[in-house]
Length: 352
Ligand SMILES: [Zn+2]
Image (cartoon, rainbow, N blue to C red; front, side, top):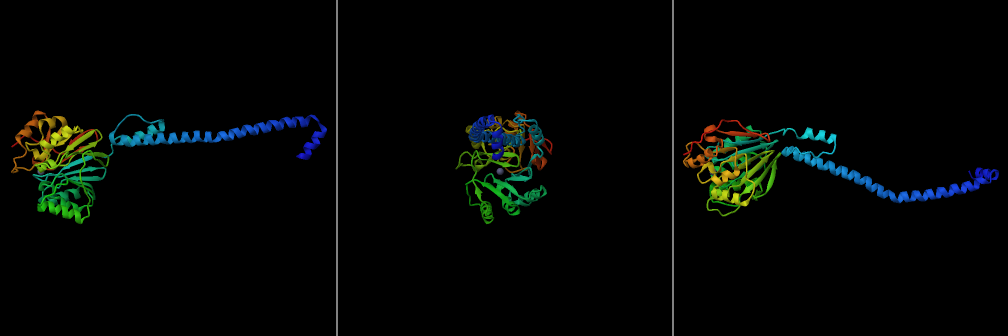
């Protein structure tokens, strides 16, 4: 090359000048490139920011999609047609239902909740109901209980639980701190300890999920109640646009505390407290919960004279349809996230 240049330069004296100008241009060009190179990180930053914000926005959309899947929120957070398409496929409809089985255990409580293959049992009836509850759970496809809640330590709520704990693996076991010297209570504690179950104390405001359903503990708001029924762990379950308040045997004192706490207690379905006792389901509480449906777990001809006339009259006055295990046996309520349906007919407002 050098030789050729040299030869060319001898032929044309203007050429070195042109080469010089060219050289200057190249050098300034290189300087320009160098500047461009120093700018490169900035450009890379911008590109990476674009990708980051793109990823973030996708994450945001995907979070919203998941949220939508749970609560059927139809607000549009997508940024393009493809994501719109993906979102539509994911959110409609809620593919599985939430089922609440109010198992007929006579004058006692046992409620099985089922959502998307996950199960929760609230109470296990009396000791004599053990096999009824275990069989019912087996027939319902229970292989594992994600949650077991012992609302309070009366026999008609915990009596059947030891057999349940021995029959299914239990992931989370909720029980209040109150203890007792009864054989029923001791049996529950020793069984749970032998199975190395962790005892989880309920904390008001604590939330957990059963499939796509969100469960919040709303009571007990206090402790040391004179009446053990007020120890009852009360949970509010939300599934899509439907909500459920399951009150154990909570009495007026606990109901007043729930009202005072300012928590959301409104629910489409209210499991009537304490088997329809007159000391539960106060007018103020009923008004605040404002249920579309009520379910009473109560035994036929029980010695406590539940459900009480006073309670049934309050439900009748508020025109709340009632479903009762003493009249219909086990009741299954099914929610698709918008509507609740029942497998049994309406109960009467007859009280005792
Ligand atoms: Zn009870």
